[in-house]
Image (cartoon, rainbow, N blue to C red; front, top):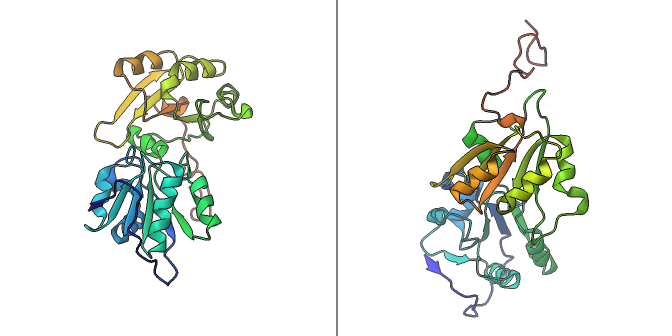
Length: 271
């Protein structure tokens, strides 16, 4: 595997033919087996992979051919990352931009796609498994349960990247829906304070650290206890916070109507 430490290319002329579209691929939350079948195929075919090395497991590169050019974008700027994508495209290479989780969620792909569009370079997006859904699977929990919560809110707290005023966590908390909070565990005390206005202190909270990675941790608590529980584990990054009654370990007492024997639908009569 060729490791490119910079973005200085050898000047090889681009092929005259139209290049392949740049593929933005969701790598999934960490477990290399959680990439989609399509994402795996694109990695197998790739001539160049630009991947977020700080978050994407390097094991995914095992799907690539030995001669692939693999570029870690962690130390690169947007302009440098764009140059790496464009260089591959203009050479007629199959280029994969590999993002953690699902690239549409906190993936910073819009700015990359906008630059490609400005140069009339085609691109496509392949979805991936987000940490929210990997965490629900690890917890063996539904995110929506009848009569408990039918709404899931994916959000983050304001930090170096501000959150619009209308999306303040304390306002979203009014719904008492299932909350999945990204990029915020380092501000857990603030998260708890903002939620406390509308969620009772006994509300279940789970902090899922590096979910689906070998060192995964699922730290359970309540709104009243979770900050202390997380502090003892020294978790300050790469975690999602899951809040809501659906995460009660006792489980729900209500049933979905879908499989209820007294419920009719287009494939079954009530019994």
